[in-house]
Length: 252
Ligand code: PGA
Image (tube, rainbow, N blue to C red):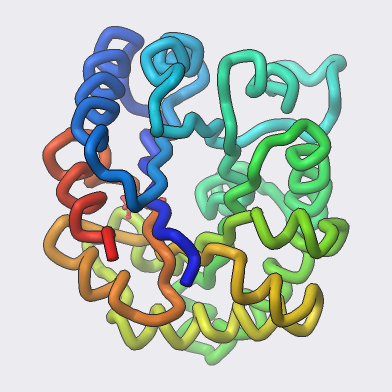
């Protein structure tokens, strides 16, 4: 069983001062939890400040997205090396808000995954279907296409330490969580895709998180599913008690 992993995606929330306070509470709150990995993804403006607070702690730091190029004329973007410089160990790629609100394509996620690994950043690769895709029985096609692209140029050794997050778009920020059975069904499908593309050992090692309205009171039933290795949390990670509640509930 891979070690559980819980990631808080702060999205476009928190000033630097607020970010410092939340990061401090998370760092101190997980101090005695030796049996779980935790990371937070603050907005870019707070990365360096949060990185200072988390330095030397167990809590990882993640970017919420990044550009695949090393540097250049890409106004508003941020490079893998800049994320590393701010103290990041991880980067969220292909989040559904990036895909649906900002037009990020499968091809772009494919390039970003490669660039992240080239800079020693662990990619958290988000996949998931919209409500319309689920209702027209296209969930597995969409998840297959997105997963296959994201991992296409990733070696087996790199894939084994990468992270996939299954986030059904209809469950993000809506309060509608996938049932544990719905999550498990897609998670095992993703694991089989990884087995096919990268081998059985990689499929066993890769961590597959669930995201979409995870809360302290539903986290343990989701994580109890055999192929759910943790959670990518949005709304419920913005306050330390609820995020720490999810982390506690995700310990196995
Ligand atoms: P949510 O967001 O927990 O607010 O549904 C999850 C995510 O977007 O990662």
